Length: 241
Figure (cartoon, rainbow, N blue to C red):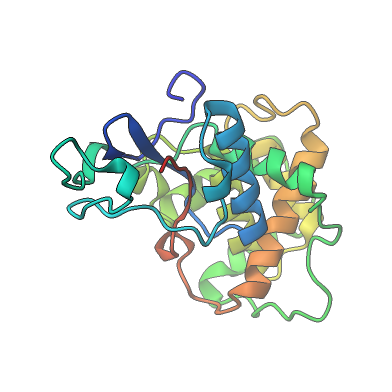
């Protein structure tokens, strides 16, 4: 899994020879159906238990025992659940997993901003950014704006090995929240996101999906000043038994 960019953040041994691997795929919440689909993908790829991939299926808790009768040792005692590995961080291919799951589920969203969802008016401190984005965005301006949002959200401070696809969505969400037109947000990401288009084979489709996801998250969590870095992280897992 590490070789494939899917390094688990937690690995538990639930009984000798049986593991549960938890993969942190997103720093922001993901749709339950997408989480379940990712669990199925991981289980198929790595021989996990397909019956334990639903987003509501909880893993075992370290420090407790596995009470399945068939897991008892030769003395008749249940095995302890142990932590074998724990390391915080989003998997480098987490965003690719989400994209693949969304494609399989047909979850592409068309509008960049859901109809009928008012976005808060820009505050005075945001006026300069909104004004600059109201005209065509030059590459130099886009890079400066993107760097400014990296600093404002303290992303590199908190996440030194950032997944740029996730960062693009965070910044897009902040700009959409302030009423910046979606085409201008896309132009800023196109010109400012590091090494864009990176490994995206269809950059414009990637930008459309990024803006759609950002807008949908605004719809789900419309509070204007909520810091996206403080939301509950998205995890999924490829469980054993």
